[in-house]
Length: 209
Image 1 (cartoon, helix red, strand yellow):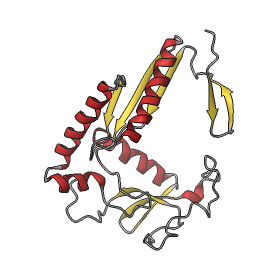
Image 2 (cartoon, one colour):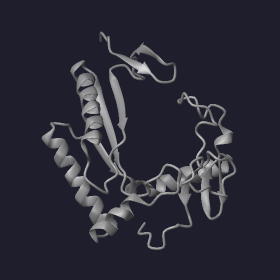
Image 3 (tube, helix red, strand yellow):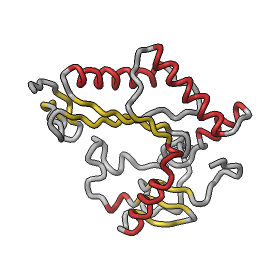
Image 4 (tube, helix red, strand yellow):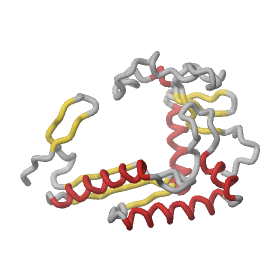
């Protein structure tokens, strides 16, 4: 199969020829929506680009299997682990349960995709279907020392990975959370860039999941 498809490699920061791991086959994962509200045009642009890529690969003769997740639990409104749970926020706004919100906005999302001729991925997996797998991964990270328990929650220890910042052009100092006046520091963290893997003690009194 002649292949002239090229991609920008964010690790090497240069354009490279695409070479699949398995001849003639491509496994493709794309991050799906957090289904607490309607997708806006900026969100949908990403899915259009992903759809174009998948269709291009298929046109070139590749056997493509594309997987997309649906985030229906555990997405905070702040990357600093200080924001409100987006699903709970949507449920409060509309006086519905979290699962009702997830179902409604998942259907709305794929309705929008259909109008834009975006192909539905081969596998669509809600996060709530993968809770046992998430728990297992967290347990493995704890066993290997890449995570730790503190304040009733499980954190990822960023100091254990020397190349943690390899995909960013920013330094560790530039990526520090809690540098703004409106961001509260988490005293349970060993390192300022550590992040929560699992809330075993929810900070939301009416947490649904």
